Image (cartoon, rainbow, N blue to C red):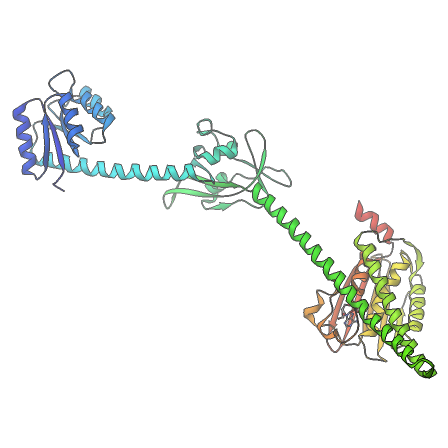
Length: 506
Ligand code: ATP
Ligand code: MG
């Protein structure tokens, strides 16, 4: 302090000199003196002082107040009036020019110094304030996020251009209106009006965020998905002066997300298709090699081939052809199910009888590697289901139970006929190798095989087919298993699957 550059405007030359010498004594630099308004303006422009001491009575047409207001229009220099006029009228006029001080003559050097120091400090603070306000305004105006501020009654006090663009309201029309009117939000799905975040912040006195699926209704009634947060504006920690809501348009992000999801799905479908083709061709190659080798051996040995050997080779060929047939059937079934052309033909049947017949057929085909023990304590087991799909379902589950069990192990097949719940519960329980827990969740995926089953032949399609058949009946399937102890598959089917289907569709 003390080095400030000051211009003295005073009509009395002697007084001007006295003030100038007082200022010099106080350590200030006097950039010049002027006795008329015009001279003052010229000196101010020329010497760019940091402060002007202005008398109100001046020589010429302009008085000090008019001069000050002209300077004020062109330059940002604080002005202190030095005057003998302390009357109301002059004071009111002077106030319009926003002076930084008003010192009534006669004054002491000390009065002068205090007035100057305070004016310079005030001016400096004001510049800083203006600068940060400008910065803030630039920030809000260039922000892509929309900002609306309100007072403590929830009336709009500010909107940035992004908020104007998004809501369709101009700041000048929105000012003073309830924020709920300008910022009207609804649930995207139910279309119900949601509580306005401004109201919520004023009540809860803390930051709040919008839930998912929120849409803004614009002035023209358009719906735009948005995300937002609202925070209290506090001048003191315990006093809310208003709310600031920041929100942004999510429509583009939502569209990008949908596109990404569609793309991911397509990539996944393509990946599965390639995997399917490569796995299926690989699976066909094994039995084909068996056939080829057996045929070559028969050819090579020609007339020397003894009957016993011929029977072995023919059996190998037969086995390979059978496994190719099974694979083909599975692939065709999958193809039909994928194209949603799975023919579902429910018809009345007696479940107990169906199961007994199935087990009999199965035991003949699998040449009784294991014993299947069937239990059902109900006599009347009438149901409406698709017999062919049931055959696929339980045929696959039984063949797994046999395949993944040691030779000669028992397999339990239980049927519970629950007339109250109107469901049939089937349990197929074996004492086989079991399924590691980590694999259990993925068993119903195409080609998925548990880590402990790799040495046993299989494609990993059986359970996928089972699941499709269960789904066609609107049923459920679950598995419990422990490695080395055994596995139980439970299938629950509605007794009248036809009815379940219609109910689910309604
Ligand atoms: P396939 O397509 O010839 O039936 P797969 O038997 O390997 O081949 P799924 O029937 O789909 O295929 O069974 C998938 C996997 O689930 C099997 O590879 C095996 O790891 C496991 N699994 C299924 N049933 C049992 C079971 N009863 N005991 C142990 N593991 C089983
Ligand atoms: Mg299987």
